[in-house]
Structure formats: C-alpha cells, structure tokens
Length: 105
Image (cartoon, rainbow, N blue to C red; front, side):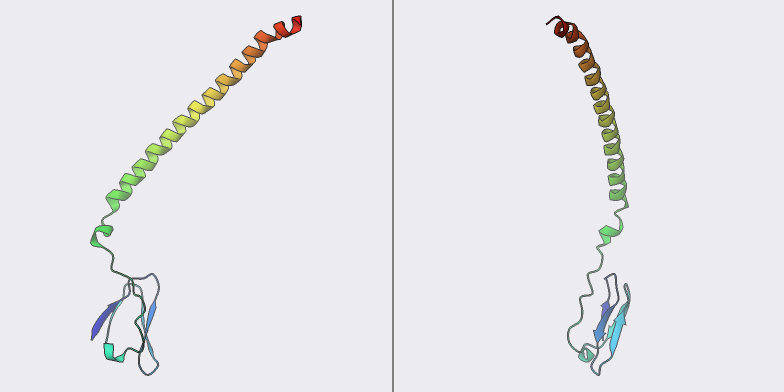
C-alpha cells in the first residue's frame, strides 16, 4: 500500500483496474495498492512548506508597509493640490499685473 495525499484545491481521482475511481478530497490521504492503479496518478500537488504556514509576520510587515505607502500617497496628493492652488494664485497675479500693461497698447 502507498499513501497518496491531495495537496490541491479540488478533488482528484485515481483510476483503479476494473473501472472504479478512488476520489481524494483536498487535504485527504488515502492508501492505495500501486498494483491496482490503472494509468497515471493525477498531479496531487506538493505539501506546503512548513515555513509558509508561519508567514503571519511577513503579512503584518507588508500590511504596515502598505499603510506607510498610503500615508505617503496622501501627503504627496495634499502637496500636489497645494501646488496647484499656488499656481492658480500666481497665474491670477500675473494676469492682474500684466493687464494694465496690455491696456496701454
């Protein structure tokens, strides 16, 4: 007998001589005699690396980085809006200062 574990997201079927199929649900392990398998065993995926199960620290670090970047974007957006307002004000001042000069011509 050989153990087969399904590491994929969906059920997988192993065909058995005689026409039946042994279905293996995600995460399930079954014992099958290799001599009874008809054809190839489907791709059952690979076991998750033990280090990937403890990635909560990485997720928290990325979440903090996203929050920091969001604050930077907000600050830059505020700065951009302020500069646009300053440009408007300066454009009005230039127009006001050049208007009398244009009127003399």
